[in-house]
Image (tube, rainbow, N blue to C red; front, side, top):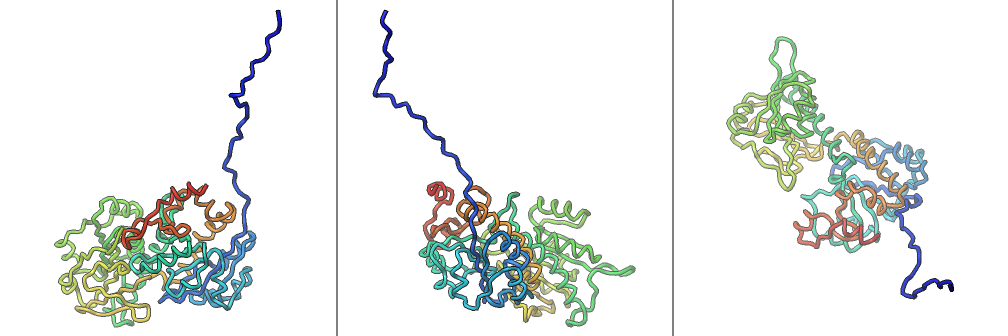
Length: 404
């Protein structure tokens, strides 16, 4: 019996396919530029000398403009000792592939921006202009905004820190303007034995409200918190750890409480656009003369009808005998603490970007960062901005996937 020959067909192709794995790239060196902010009342700087020291010792390069940290009392010497290179020419700082700013990009910055640059900065939605965005899109810039930057737990770390600072600062400010030195009523915020405590009303039970409540309670004041979200009121009570007066925002109750309070804090936030005005001019006119209103939500229009923007130089005005403090960007008045808080979030982020071989790889692996990106290589990836300025919106996830 003859042996059968093996049957070979040309239609089969016997070839092993290689499996493609997503291999982690080798780390790269990142070049970071920190310009000196010229924006109005911006005293913060986004990386402290300590953070720069960590970045430099990990092999990264940091360029910093002369006197950039002055307003937060960080000197050039502190930065050069940490290993940064001090540059006297603004244009040179802007040549860095990654720019880190503590104020939004403004028109003067546009011609200095490079093609394909990565910019990490705040964006103030209310002050954003279409031309700015279009110019940045032309330069194929990738933009990461402080406000929308999320961490692993899904919270917004920079916004949270800034809110904690603003909330804690509110009571310091109130104490200052109730005292006699600033022609206040001469009342000690809080109270002592035998004297009824000072009444503090807080509108909004977010982070600012919570930290304002903590500070007021620590001083011995009586605190009443108003918010329309019962969940937030519950959370505030749990976090503060004691029962406090809470109420939903009901005009009659609110009006009655405002008549007898010494301090009223507006800390309402709104997800999109302006804060609702919930305290009318009439309610303010019925408040006690010499009482203090602090409107933290003035950044977004304010929640007292009588509020008007003031500055760190002239922080207050008086209307109906009530002292109004309506300074936007309160954390900038505590620039060093605020700089440390921002730096604590950005430094690990920049280190990771270096380890992953650049920002593109970082956002491929870290999905939570994608919410913070409003421009990706010139494509607008923030839905609110695209709707507001009627510009083309691109889905970031599709963009990233298509580049892989």
